[in-house]
Image 1 (tube, rainbow, N blue to C red):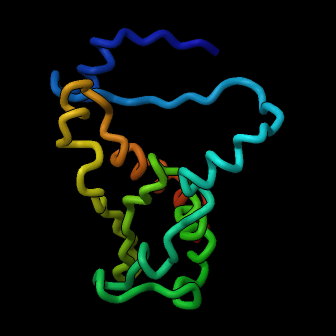
Image 2 (image 1 turned 135 degrees about the vertical axis):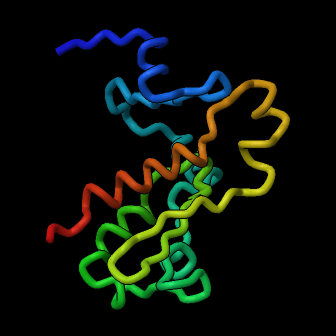
Amino acid sequence: MAVHLLKAVFAKNISLRNTEIIPAVVSTGYIAEKKGNDARIRKYMSTNRRLPMEQLFFVDTFGSPLTTGAAGAYAQPLEMVRWAPSASNKQPWRIVRISDAWHFYLQRTKGYGKGTLLFSLLRLADLQRVDMGIAMCHFGTRYPAR
């Protein structure tokens, strides 16, 4: 099913301001054979390194790390968030559980993205906000049913 949207109509419907853009990422193509450079690129970009759970997820306040045991049924969704892709592997998300609610916060990386000269000149998307959406999606797709 194909859908055609006029940009102006869509922008009006979501109350998009002139200073805002909506980034979209689409992956297409075929999986290629691994080349010799893959390992070097992955090492350079630290794609296999993730922050530990205790630095990303908290209980009640940012000073109280959430452990896997305390996460209970939410351990798997949180692990999915921990391994979710992010721009330059910055992992800008922080999640605080307060009672039964999960609160997502953006911890900006200093000197990266929004507010930098390159970001302003090229009118780049705020990738750390995109990362937050990716994290929420990963959490939501594995959120335990009630």
